[in-house]
Image 1 (cartoon, one colour):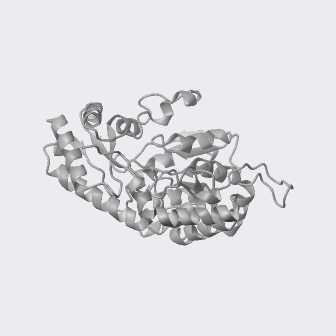
Image 2: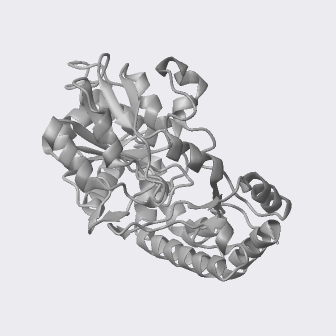
Length: 373
């Protein structure tokens, strides 16, 4: 049996007539940059998330960069975030000239630990970027309390968490900005790169839309130095269709995760793994990834067994950002963030996509159990 980590062909086959009709209509209009399709999708995301407004952008990475730029974060400023995330989170901080400051994670959720954030706040701190990793939100109440007490901007990195909920409210509605990615592997994935920023005010929304178009307003007059961060209309029409099905896909992932947990707990590997846990505060975990932890240093052995058996898997993420070569000037070293480092040595993501089957999960679980026997 072949079990890919992600297979989008089935999803596309089901939606192909609807998507191709919308693309044909867009081609007839020849309105490929911003325009009505992007505005419509922005309104739909605003309503879906329960935000004040949304600004479509070119990628999740650019969403983070644009939020920092619009907030005026730059040289001399510090931004606190997690070392256990995709590079884009910290890359955006570095690109605006600010200093990334790391805080260790909660080993259960993999998300940044609010108690560790508090230890890192200095007079130079200007923002906090919590990452809602693998589809589960960070513990936002204490993060927002810290931000309020120290007058800090909160930018939610919700690239993996559209539709995830914390105490009944959706990702992207807690901080001043919520940054989302529509990379094809996300729960809501486009036909290439794309992203969106939700925001808490009309004033912030206006600034974002100026900054995403070279800081231009009106045409050819530039108050700010922005960039070309516009969302393509092609992505908007595809995403607008997919958004209608998103909650159903979330539910399928939740069901698949529950089935995995039941199977693993009944297997001989139960005491050799740590399974993903849903936090008490999480109303909804959308499982962009289902990342187990393999105990006793046997993660790579299990990964090799899965690959040999034709099962897709991946390590998100094998090297924490504080010890990445490009951030050597920050002086990070092994031992600085032991919980993030432990996660990097043990995590392994398994197939969780909506169209995957019970038979596939049985094969995954039995292969891991055999490898650990």
